[in-house]
Length: 89
Image (tube, one colour):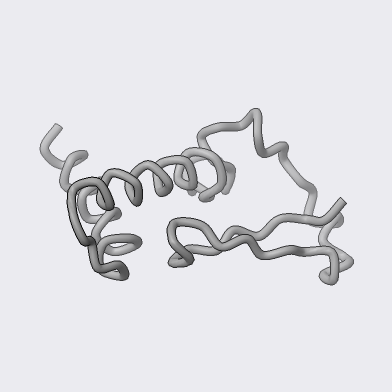
């Protein structure tokens, strides 16, 4: 269990906390809540074939659907530190 906790803490530090100056406990809770939503709803995971844990929000896309790159939109999340990219309808 210790190795799992260390990996989670390392991920949080590398991807989030090293990039943001945390002001107080309330700010930390807000940033961690936004990151958790991003981590479970959008961020790709290698063990899940580059799909997020919350599969209901992200259907699998075929590589052939990526022909038109102009239809991709960027959405800044977690106070603008991380960007999510979505296909436009």
